[in-house]
Amino acid sequence: MAGIQDFVEYTEDFFGPQTVLASPVGSDQWDLVVTGTTPTATVGGINGELTLANSSATEVQNCCVYQSDVLNYDIDLLQRVEMRVKMTAAVGGVLDSATSFAFGVAGARNDAIDSIAQHALFRAIGSNAIVVESDDGTTDKDDVATGASFTSAVYKKFVIDFTGGKSNVKFYVDGVRVAQSTTFDMSGYASGVQPYFQIQKTSDANTDSFTVDYIKIVSKRA
Image (tube, rainbow, N blue to C red):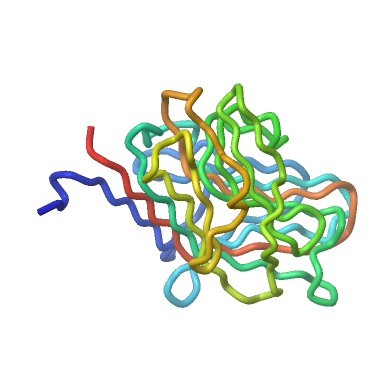
């Protein structure tokens, strides 16, 4: 019977009290990179949440929470990445056109999502529509429509499925496979990834945010 001897299961439920710090030390697992004066990443709340939020400053902002480019999860062993995420739009329930965010797994971080050489991510880019993308450094599938959308302040469950192998990565929203007509092939990459969450905006005063309730990563043991 398969069990802990066969699989690594990592779960982060973002319980407080906890502070996400730039250049973490000791046992801290989450690293913070911020561009701009006051975007925030906060941890806590009932049952634990991580919230990344723009501030009202009219400026370019970027707020990224990741694991210091320590790529613990070998893509050839990875099985499943599961997250529960909600978007909160500050005005009228619609994501501001200047705002975008991304969440999933990635290689070494970059402010520009499309410049991250390896990644499998869900994104929202200036609207409530959910898109997905993958890149292995060779094969790049950008901003593929899913037909699914966020409703402001309502959680959705997201899954990135590697059980069919890295040459056929699958994406699910609330249990429904999305973007099925696209093959997300990451077979050109043979190293590790890390969990990755990022919100950013161009120069704009909006205070949109997104919140991660939990992330669970399942991987085969080496």
